[in-house]
Length: 367
Ligand SMILES: [Zn+2]
Image (cartoon, rainbow, N blue to C red; front, side):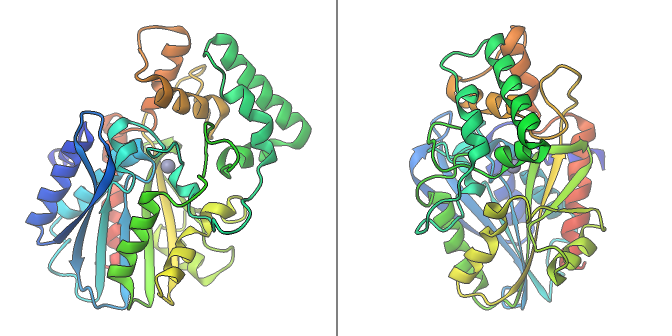
């Protein structure tokens, strides 16, 4: 167990991709690669989305498992994929279900340690209908100025905290949560920017789904993320409608511990359903994001239990300003644990990610 779960993790995008490809090949998967047409990785490497197909591709039931929608969260997601591949259950015993592992949906962010794509787009806010007016996010409007200062300083962080406190005082805690998770479409330089058109990763995902799922009648999505929930523990979010059969099905798969997010984050919640419709699949789909907090964050670190302004600001700062210095103290020292909290952390979190990946993939594939 110890060897397996530590072996699942990588420290660079390129090594994670190699590990995924080699492990999938050894498990008998059919592999395909979708090369990024323009962007390069942090070390100049070519970028791609890599796909491994296992099981029965003609089956009614299909299971896509996606890692790296938020780039730097890809390490944990890729580890969950590799962990399942390394188990003896991946293939060839899958007879009634097809499994499609999608590695590094946002390869630019994966390589550069960024949540966003090469265009500063938060990919899972990019699956809206771009032919219609974008959803408004007045809460974000009130925070944007504080979240994007020209220069970061202790005062900048304090002003983010003040802006958040003001919003909570005026409109309640839900207003802050919604401002920070719902995405925004008005500030391309800001946080949680959903884009003004479809990102390359968005278009590629539709192509991948169309190529593999045109015949499917039941599709279950697992998408791996990190960042919220208790340290080392899974945290399941479903974007199916409350009280729907799909949500009940998802709750069965995830062991009943599920939080329904569709009422709070409609933009992301619609994404899978819309993509499947576009690809011609008339299917029932039950979707779930699984998150792990992968690093301990102590008091005063700026990382609250939930998504917070400082955390979002630091994520942005990391992208704009390069690496943070953990020994610098002050804002840079504050930034480091927040940035790392989104990547793969210590062994307890890694073991939790590995176990959860294996158990939940197995539960959905009904092995
Ligand atoms: Zn995420």
